[in-house]
Length: 171
Image (cartoon, rainbow, N blue to C red; front, top):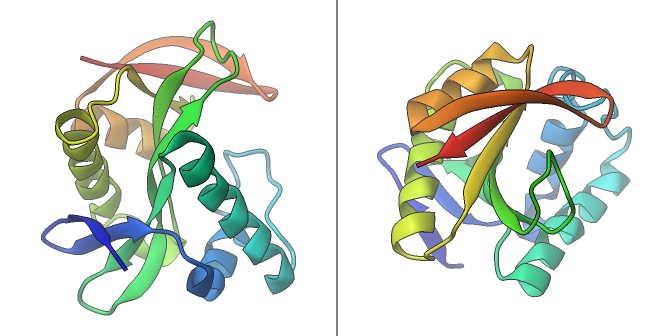
């Protein structure tokens, strides 16, 4: 399997069907979904659908979210990377959204910031992606901090799926 990005502590690669257990641990956790509309998956059998959704982005848009693998343990710790947004969000369409989602036991270790910075570098210098934006629930201070540390500038707030979000520009 191809490694797209390697950082000091992470391997970032495509999400693959073998990531089913890690994806279930991630997507079934209520804490992970507290700022995402509170709809975690309930069964392991739902995990392949999440993986297929991500992998379909690779086919449809040549880009998608990527698995974050902790080098030290080889554990799936979450996903990161880009999603091509081809529907209008906050007045924008046809842009790349930088995102990340991690299993809670890996929170607070700087992995999200490390991954976000590495993805931005790869997206800009290798993939020539433009424009790149980020969004985070406005009350999710941790996620907003990651975007700022990665080099994004906070902009306006807007409603998205019934939740107040903050828009982030990348220069």
